[in-house]
View 1 (cartoon, helix red, strand yellow):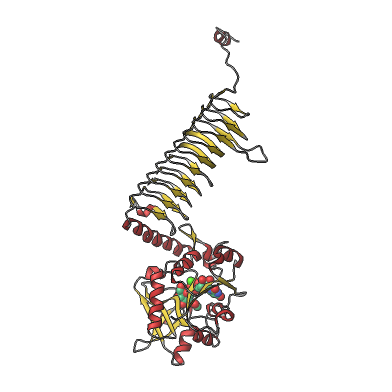
View 2 (cartoon, rainbow, N blue to C red; view 1 turned 120 degrees about the vertical axis):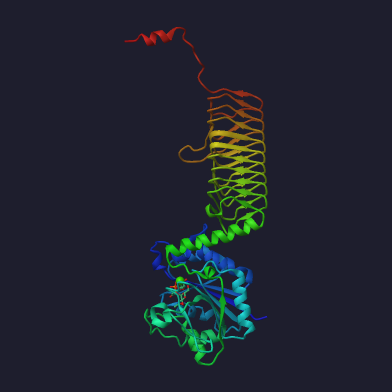
Length: 457
Ligand code: UD1
Ligand code: CA
């Protein structure tokens, strides 16, 4: 089989984004643009993948990690110059090289595969992925001769009046015969409106030396959208959202209002999950069947068990069991593990805490750095006092305990199994099993004292 390589262009600053954040790091449905591109290339199992970085190189490399090799383009002299940076790593290799832009996150694995297949079947030296758009402004135009053969690509800023009318555009994605690519790059000049070395010029160079140049046109123009500014970013977000939501609906997920439901590309959802409007579900989240999410719920990087209900809540980096009830208005912060049949009610904040099966914190509590056993009832207003101003300490509440309302559990502290803590207690010492802990001032009633107060001058 022909060896296959990829070059991902990601060195530009993205001036038109008007942002401190480098363009390819702008998130779409919670995932940086560059990760979408790399994620969609991954199933092709390419023999080598090289990302060209420049602006924000450190940040981009950190984001991509070991999913790609990198070459730094010190100065951004154009897309041809960017590809040339990979010369040292690729030049002598036989095979097909796909060049993709880091700012076209919607192109699917299927389209990449079709482009490779078309290119290799035709034995072409270059194949451009093209599409027809209503408004081609900003894109390079595909110029064909009278026989319909591709001759060259002209950039928007270099195009004459007639060329500007052409609606077939360069998507910025190409397959090349690897050796022919690096040979042709030697001949690219920067004699154009932007004074840049244009990768599209390679097409004319190959064509003029009688090499076979092809275009593979996709009918899905939306897929090939290049994200140059925030308007396109919003359009891409909308398109990706629709694509992902439709896939989940086809798999048996009910999404009540797809226009107002945001699901990331790496989220897995089992059939018969129902998602109410205003939910944002991102990261590597998994939601098991029969769960009900939302309305207005944010879930990031979580596993949610079967038949769990989460309303108007925020849940991050945590594991939630089966038949759990969360919210409305609960906040589950990172590193929490919630067992089965647990209830985390309104205005309860949980952080780095374990809840055993069948336990409850139904109202207005803060449970942080805590180990809560099974069948524990945490009364309204309970607070684990986990922080002494310097360090965080652990609260352990063993199985079958009952914590009365408005208790402070000053950590480090252990509440033994089957224990009662009286309402309003401030617990500073460990409580042995099967006991009752009361830590509050004893009540005193003064008969007839009310009249005295009322009659005060
Ligand atoms: C480019 C194409 C245009 C095509 C369009 C599709 C060129 C000259 N033009 O235009 O024909 O229709 O994409 O979206 O190629 N980059 C570098 N180093 C550089 C310059 C750019 O790595 O020196 C990277 C950018 O980070 C970006 C990609 O190359 O990811 C494309 O650059 P951009 O400036 O967005 O090109 P367009 O003007 O969109
Ligand atoms: Ca672009």
